[in-house]
Image (cartoon, rainbow, N blue to C red; front, side, top):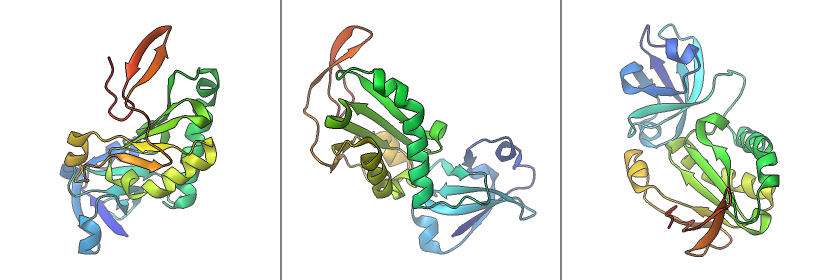
Amino acid sequence: MLIITIKQGKEKSLLDGQPWIYASAIEKVDGKPQEKMKPGSTAIVQSSSTKFLARAAYNSKSQIRARVWSFDQNEPVDHAMIKRRVGAALAKRAPSRAQAGNRQLVALIKAEEDGLPGLLVDSFGGADGYLICQFQAGGVDAWKVPIVQALIAQTGCRNVYERCDALIRKGEGLPVICGALSGVAPPDEIELTDNGVRYIMNLKTGHTR
């Protein structure tokens, strides 16, 4: 595991709960070279006096060098944490999902807001429809398989598609890929309804007309 040491005086934003760490705040990063180069490697973040500050996903290729997973020293970054975070996000959005019609797009996971920095997940059509995921940071990309497994288990929807924002993923040093992660891909065009207004969307790209 990597250890990120924050410059003296630069820890205030973390103590205030800011989940992003920029290069200018980092004094040094200790750990194996291959771990330093791998986007999304788990790191312990500490102050210049070696006081624990957070656990984060480190990415040397991103302008945001690290994104905080947890400020709790007793919460490891593991499969159980991913499952809990996904479950909590789905529970929070359950009322919206229950009220949505089969032609509505519902946001299920909203990145940092749900403790899953860089992950966006939308649902269309309920359990028989599609989950559209965007992995926009190294940390969630590294945990892609457990995230998809948790989504399928907790929603019952087996059609999971990865949408790709090329600019964002390139900026994170991640491969520009998209496609079905489970089940089948959505059709090129789907009719959606939003506040009574109907429009056509390509769920694969997010483009509408």
